[in-house]
View (spheres, rainbow, N blue to C red):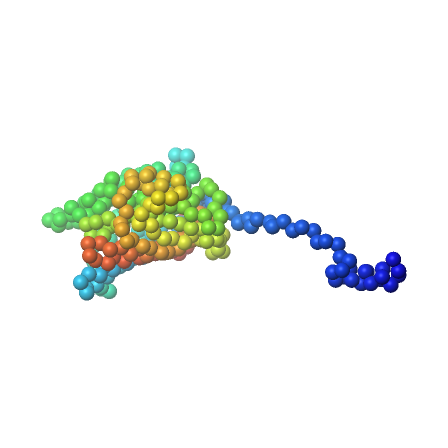
Length: 299
């Protein structure tokens, strides 16, 4: 090879002519980051939450709007190898069509505390002393007033059933596991709509993580299913069957978001709006909760 030709190859090697073939590039599969969600509740702390609910019923051109506000304080203490969650209401208010109304429900809520026995992994076990609510009804409603609707609502079995469903809908299947973006979990939930019950499967999809004042948190988007698909994942079918295979309400839809700190369990926020047709009326129920503070327990 003449020197000039050798030089030209050296020069061209900087471009393409005398270049060695590039190594074969093998695609690297994308690995979605996962977070481990353990149930580590805050001990010796008081968790204050604000809760708001709104119910709008539209029928025949008329619109009825009712709202409720609560402030709750929650405490976790070790108990029976698991945890005892004690939640009391410190403030309650109701309004109808924008006007504050007084009712016996507020008095009842202020007179007793919900006490949930949870397993070490955060699984709901039972409601402790649910009869305290019935006693609060007797103390709140004077003689001569029909307290049967309140008594049925706060009856031990009914109260435990609602509390269990609410806990499962919010946290069931999320603890003691790794969660990655796009992962879905399911729970069955119900809402009272007059004399009927709106039932649906709540689908929770992991959107990622978010920094909050309570630490790193997992973010879940929420939506409703009004039927169990034929090709449903086993976990979805299992959740529906474990709930007793309830008849789901046709046409129910919902959307929302839940944020939960997982280094130390704190339910940072949750928003859910459910819409459903019930006996010719359009029901819209909105539920919101937000952590307001986590303070050291006063000694």
